[in-house]
Length: 132
Image (cartoon, rainbow, N blue to C red; front, side, top):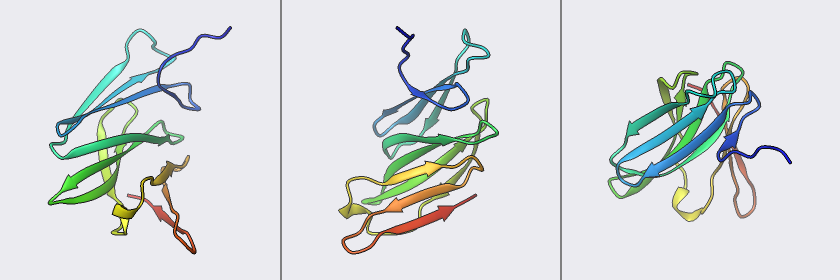
């Protein structure tokens, strides 16, 4: 039987763990097969965070995390970008939409770092392609 590890396995072999302290912070742990004994941990203080989800890793080992935040009574959806060592590179705000009526937002990061968001609708779907 193979060895099993908790977290999200990326194509590079890195293992990503994502957790949220609701209303306080996003916490990430990244384990690299090249240095398994020293995972790096990242904490981003976000007083309005509701949830987070890993959305992918690009060819340069930058990685992306979707966060939901509650700002002035509205839910905001963003993708945070991190460098290979965990440094925060930037944030991509998702366009305004009828977010509140959907229970799931499907977002992925491609090998080039472009964010792809799929928004299902009653009669048609919308695809957003975003980059920093």
